[in-house]
Structure formats: structure tokens, C-alpha cells
Image (cartoon, rainbow, N blue to C red):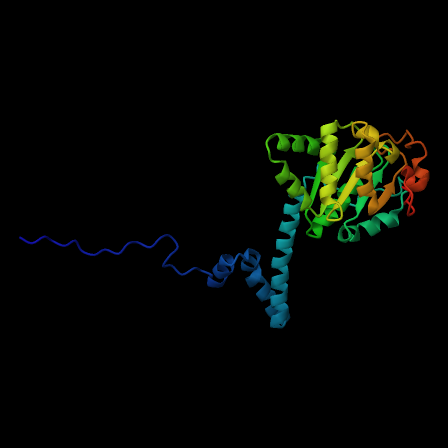
Length: 287
């Protein structure tokens, strides 16, 4: 008695296979990751037909739409990675309120040539005068230019580095920081650093020296920086030496945005004697 052979049955196609998509071109564009082109090619083609636009112009419009969407997405991703507490722009800064501030200098900085030169930018002034706003605005411009940017309050970064050092991860964290195009260190000087954190701050500055740019906001004159760094004049001098070698200095000695009824000032800092901080050399831009 012979066994009966089961009739051959075809395995059903997976969902989507074996069926012709309603719009094959749109499906192919999506497979290439060109989602904006897939979504808009038909509507733009109809507009081009009505306007009797040449094919290269239609294709250029379509590619421009895809590129703009990709750049916008990249910009938003870079902003997120930068970790700005609030996104600020140069256009949103009230230069009329800080009448002593050199607006031309700030707009020149916004062209980002200081990044190409690996220069530091130091914003010096009392609390509330807009130092963080301006530092953030330059960082946002750098993100728009597809640069690698990160923003840290000084104490937060130093605490992260202490934790990384304890876990044996400090070289990796320092290496990550050294690959940035721009590191923004906010609020230096509001609280003093202990010797361990002062040493870590020095290591960060050394890693980026002449390789990447650092923006520092501080309320302290340079001559008093030893007080910030555990009273160590040697390490403070080494840090200043690197930050000031290639620098752009912005001194803001005006009123506070938070308490406009009070006048700002750091004991005549706005006059910028010897670069406003006891440092000789090129003229400071009075803030």
C-alpha cells in the first residue's frame, strides 16, 4: 500500500510581497530614504506641468525640498545633542539695553571664523547682563553650520568628570570632549572648584587647546581666577595661558536684565584696562 503524497501548496507571500504598490516611484523613493521626495514629487510635477517648467528646474525643486528637510532634521538633532538649557539667538538679544556692547564684534563672531582658528571666546561681566544668552546664540549658529557643540554649566561638567574618573572612564570622556568643535562652559566663578575639579578643568582646556574652541562665561576678573581654582595660582595661570593665547574677549559691564533698576559692574571692568583683566596684548572689545 503506497503512501499518499500531500499535494504541493505554495507558501503565501509575506505582507506586501507579490503586490504591486499603488505608486511604484514613491515606494522606490521611500526605499532610498527620500521620504520628502516621495511625498511631494507628484504635486511638484503637477505644478511644473502647469507652469511649463523645464525638467531640470522641477528636479532641482524636488531635491531642494528633500535637502532642506534633511538639514532641518540635522539641525534639530545637533541642538538636542548640544544640551542648551534654552535656545537663544543673536537676533533675540537686545543690544539697545547693553549700550556699551560692541554689536559689530558680536556679529563678526557669529560668522564663526573663531572656530576655524580654534580661538576661545570669553564673556566677562556681572550676573544678568546676557553672557549666557550670547554664548548660547553663538553655539546655535555653530549647530546650524553643522559643527559639534556641547553646552555645560561648569559645575555640572566637573561633577560628570569626577564620576567618570571614579569609574575609570575619564580618558573616554575627555576624548569625547576633545573632538568637539565648540565647548561652552557657563557660569565659571560663581562657586569655587576644589583641587580635584580644578585639575579636571585644566585637562579639559588642555585637550581643546589649539584644536577646538571654548566659550567661557564668567563673573570674575582674570586676576582673581586663582580663587576659583582652589586658591592655586599655578593652575589658574596655566588655564588662563591657554584660554588667552588665541582669544576673543567680550566684556559686558552694563545693567542686569533681571534687575534693571540696579547698575552692573565689576569695579570698572567695562573700561577694559589691559584687556579688562590684567592681560596685555590686543585691544579688548568693551562690552
